[in-house]
Length: 195
Image 1 (cartoon, rainbow, N blue to C red):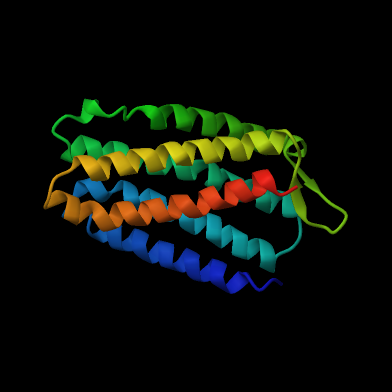
Image 2 (image 1 turned 90 degrees about the horizontal axis):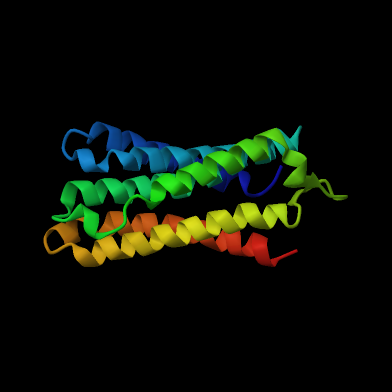
């Protein structure tokens, strides 16, 4: 069992707590309902990371399920930006908010490929760790990196376009989403750069 089990389960629990909080507050502001999906995806990723360290049989299956969550993260971040633009912007068409649909299509295709032919993306090395094959693994993490960078750009555009007091109200939510995206961007860059 790894030292990362406890932080994974704490992160999953915190994500579920926040998802429950947003679920209970959904009537106060329907624009924040997509945040439930973001927190659920984060709970999925971290919970499965923790479970994969506790139950060490079939590591390829655990990694495939974790990758489904990693592929869904840019989609739900895009859905949040789309919903915020739709609810709060005076001109929701000013920003190109339909990008998340294309990201969702790419995530579905890559998710089906990862689940259907995992040997093209994942292998177990001599040490027993799951590693990503090249160039298929690069394609997977490159897609995640690009989609999250687009999401970060969209979040920044939203934050700049809104006026006070709405900007103040949304600032911490957008900064939190940006922080989650930055962590995943750092992970994707690490997996792309380190052999």
